[in-house]
Image 1 (tube, one colour):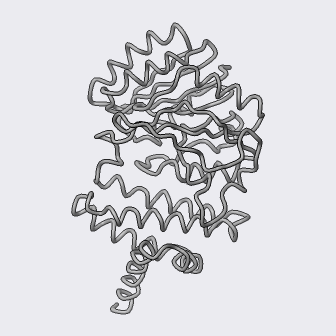
Image 2: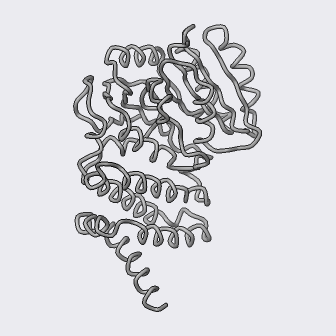
Image 3: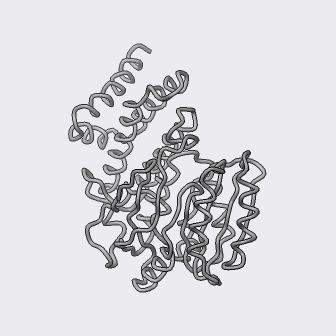
Amino acid sequence: MPKLSVIVPFYNVQQYAPDTLRSIRANARKDFEFILVDDHSRDETPAILERAAEDLSKYAEVRHVRHEVNGGLATARNTGLDLARGEYLTFLDGDDWLAPGYLEQLVAAIEALGCDFVRTDHVQATARARSVHRAPVGRRDEVLNPREAILPVDRTTSVDYAYAWAGAYHRRLLDKGVLHFTDGLRTAEDRPWIWKLHREADSFAVLSLLGVFYRRGVANSLTQIGDVRQLDFIRAFDQVVAETAADRDAAKLLPKAVRTYCAIIAHHLSEIEKFEAPVAKQLRVMAAAAIKRMPQDALGDVLETMDLRRAAKLRRLRRRITTAKAAA
């Protein structure tokens, strides 16, 4: 069994893949396994991966697979999870990179703590600018209860720091069925995943460890493209709310899920001009329907406590539903 499996999906990242692969080479170890998943790239990414996999196999175990059709990041990660044999698992995206020696430190930390998973800080890279982003948990390098880290409702918490690549995960979570992503989600795929992780794992810790560089502003990233795939956040948060409503602590946790859902809807509405016109119209319709589906008591509490600007956007959606029902 490899000590660590690193799952790295790639899709049309020929400009960035060489940096990613060089950073993997600088973290290679004979008992590490790197699973390179090409999600049916249409540029030079497949050729780059072919060459890199051959070179990397001299220093670590390598598994290189190519999808026959593009399935999205969640599906590509699931392919890697199905192949992974490591005692521990982690992720990296095909346009990001790692500091030399980071993975060795990551494995040493989770082994020493003995918990189900660990989370790390990261460095955000936008062009030449660099900024450190901290996991929103103050207590570091000690084992904590992941369910308790979901709250409080009105503050940024661990479930809002949804980056799958910012951490490592013990294999027992994979065997328990916790680590797979909702297949086919094109965006917000980390959201149902991070909530499930915090509801179902028994222990976690946050490390004071930097080593993942997250590249922002990539031209073909979904965060930069205003097409219909962006609207998958609705499906993702519908899942968060439904699963949280079924949880044994639903009374405590559901207000947090609803508040986060509302905040994301308000965010997308505030940037609606970036969407293609038909998608912007669809966003308004789907967001209004989502507001209608939410637990209305929890929604009312959220609108009373949320800041005026965002609450006003959501109230307008709510009134539109009420007016349409009255007219019908």
